[in-house]
Image (cartoon, rainbow, N blue to C red):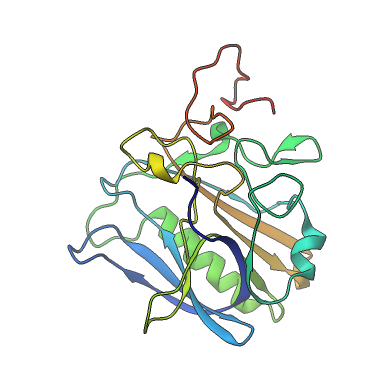
Length: 226
């Protein structure tokens, strides 16, 4: 079953802070985003529950699969269809100029962070925030699952790979063309930057439903060829 309300949010960040769950675990970095007439929150995982399972990649020379389509979007939330050829992202299938948008071999393992210290991923998200704010026309794009809680600010979460999960461990969220990421566009530098997040438990060999599959003769990157 795919994640709910797969969407992209476009807007201007205003600030951010860390939020933990009720048990004081599972930290997310919440970015406050002004998206047109709507104030939204972008919830980014900055540490896995055991502190060691997160993979991430920052690409500061990024070309989006459809830069024109992103620039043409109105600010706010835009629902996305889970199909190729549009704005939807897929870590296993999306290509830019014939090359995979991201591959597992290019991602870094997030080390365990001592209590009280910011993780490398948290620092990366803060840097994203600061770079976007510093550019007068800087814009942030967040891909993931859109939500709206009664009486609370709406927003977007699941900003990470959303396929290849094993049964019993977020396997119900599996699907294709529904992966999350953060992109920022810095017009003053003519630059796009991307942040990709995945988990070691997620397979990069997935079937048409986004579930893990066993295949042979795969490319060294671990990704399916199509």
